[in-house]
Image (cartoon, rainbow, N blue to C red; front, side):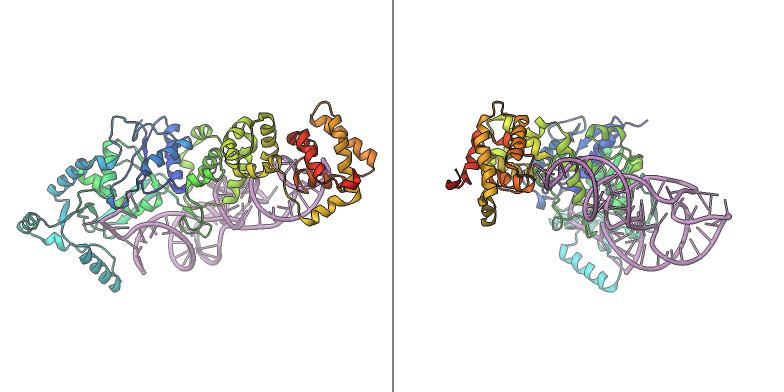
Length: 480
RNA sequence: GACCCCUUCGUCUAUUGGUUAGGACUCAAGAUUUUCAUUCUUGCAAGAGGGGUUCAAUUCCCCUAGGGGUCGCCA
């Protein structure tokens, strides 16, 4: 069987986004499942869209999610370099070969010329494509223009009246007429290749076995198979993934949803949840199972079970899944990941026991890392009350409750939930107050909220000294 | 507009000729819990429409409709 070699080939124009992640993930999973090689290739052939630091950022994002590549920038295999701007001579050479074989031709049209041409075609309702006016140029004219220093590109000469058909692993047989393909520019006037030339050349020389990419490439696949044919190369297997859409069914965009993976991470989503969730966007195992670690996904993933239809990116399920991982990952792990967030807020987490108890209580009630920090505020800083709430605390019943605890709390020898619970029970009996009347004043005084974690835990986390202090705050003088 | 792809609950999806069309999220109700949350149980909710093929179609074929993609010296 053929050795599986797949690549994720983004253009470094920004950050890793959800769509890119899904493509990368499926490539990764397929490679792992098939014991193949996962390659990262940077497609930076558009000089006008260079973003400094984008490559490094991409690699970091991939790494943060656990998607480490086997070959790529900084991890050279035997097929490098893996950055297209460092392989220009390779593309130029193939373009030259295409030129010599008559499969390509130089074009001197300016962008203005082309724009006008397209406008006319559009107005006439014609299929917009290059009208081949430069194909008529004689050899002498071409040489004269080149000698005169005129800028030119190299175009692929798509044959007339041909059917291009190919087999897509997800979609099956796909057929398109050559009349639908433009004479695609292969080499730009600045000497850089376009995607079409570069990806075909690289996929060939890097011995890529399966091209797993988004569906937006489906309609340019005929050009690619024709290129393989012209160059006398065998084409890889084609795999076009469905797209990820906004809730309004438009292509996933920055406008509607946050699409930057970095932002999700920064906003408290766990890599486990992001990976698990995105894996399920378009792929499903045979059974009803939905929760998978990356390793488990590597085991069960199959291209055969990738869906054909586009999927909408819906945050609600991601949130649920994130909450699940928040609760099921080891407490220490969650504590570790929350740490920078707590420090950022200036909370004193020098007491590890208090910190861990806080996290344990908060993770049950939150779905994001950031929410945990917000939730734990009550344990680290006293809250302020509304006038309404202060009135509740000023009632005689509430005062009795507070006074009881101020008096009894210090008698606890072992500051643990069990003993605290005993005091609470004793209070209910001794005071003859129970239910809301008993618990609400306590919570209000202690955490500034009517709702919160179990009282014994709350006391335990806040600690004896701080608890007393908070309760005393609301104890009116005449009641003391 | 042309071409290509797609079409099961609101969303992600299972079921590839015979099922009470299954699961998950969301939402609702209930149970547990002093509250909140977790957890558990139950419920709501679907095969775009029209033709065929067949004893039988969500499943196969055709048409229509809808959605998406592509049509750059961007990837």
